[in-house]
Image 1 (cartoon, chains in turn blue, yellow, purple, brown):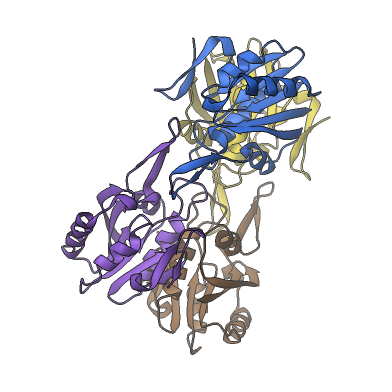
Image 2 (cartoon, rainbow over the protein chains, first blue to last red):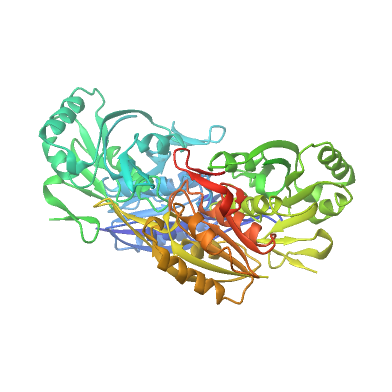
Length: 160
Length: 160
Length: 160
Length: 160
């Protein structure tokens, strides 16, 4: 089994520079996570963008879509900022023949309390199990991007 | 969505006492893991056994089977020692109407390099996505218990 | 042996809110750190301020000085932001009969790669060992506040 | 400032092999700890022994003593098993011109709840601050090896 993994940025990859309390979107944290674990599937990771998802626009989504469409692997995970993960999921929904799971994190992977490792696990479990389609894997649940929303106050994704 | 989680012991729950280099199988580590994360599904956790899986026998498996069969929830995760996880999976395979995912860890949850959080994530993703049946979720893969084995030398599960 | 610990804020106690990429100075992280360890000395922790040290002024330093002077315990640790830790150290230098060690962290205690636990260890080792005076404990070294500086580019404290 | 660090084994360096619930004393964990931190002092690390301290004998202690005596650096830290750390400390007590601090951990460095990072911090703070002599740095306290004992029931070192 092989999974193609694309990273496009978001909180999961954020790195803070404390002197000025600023941050950058760093390298794909999914790489260090998977390299640290006893994994028995093949994967390749490509960093497409390093953006806060609030800064992503339609051109970014078209670029992601082209790259996903060009990927031979059927199983695809995209690590993405949570604020517009649903929009990107909708933009990919007319791609055929692929199982695409978007995930991310409410806290950067380098925070002690980050949900990144768990969420990537959920995404791996989902992409290994689901039929073709586009899915959001957040908070331990698998959502249809057309039937969910991010509840900012509670910091969780929920069904519409 | 609700998931019923049963813990029966295994490495994932092992606690070492260094003075004598001995260990006990402690409380279900899955509880602390899920409580530390922003989870959006309902779950309940029951500790059925606290055994190294090499010490489990047929009576233990019948006990687990009874408790799983009596559970109303369709989605079930069992945290289990890796050495006989496959045997327990086979023993549960004639239960109908349930999606049962067994998982565990190659290293105890309280080791810094443990695979426990990731594996529980994979199990949650799988149990949310799969049709009725019994599955093994280890090393980022979902296996049929009749078509996999634990490769002790490499420390991973693999297809037969 | 007893140590009085004062927290006044700084990076060590920073908590990030990712949605808006802002932070607050949270509760004293030194408390959770010491409570998680097998400690054999008595201590009490008081939160005096919760400020980024760039926002501290002379009135803040006088307030800290009053509270330190009023403390009966001879051994005192202050967790402090790194940007003006040296200034506070100088302001406390005419207090007699006390061994005062200031420490902090280059990364918040809740980052996986934080130096907070180590630095608090160094401060505990120093305050247990040194004669009366005021000291800076950063980067594994013990400095005289009048003979050191923070090298922002390298992110370390160094001798003048 | 330079610190010479010797590792001789002990719980701090233990690595567990779960399949058989056995362990080995691995490589010096102090190396990975210091390499992960923003350290501003020079150090060199030598692995002298890799033993559970209950397995150390007089010949081991003479070997350690020779190596410590031959070291030019005045400041020396020894990471050591906790069960006979005090005996080794006593054996080194007639060395002149050196400040020697022994430390270790109640839990292996690769356990999430390990005291290793904190204890090494305490040892660094102590060895930077103390006059010539031999000291035990455990549980956040600095002990004279002739005036302390390990309380096994409570898992802490205490004064005699």
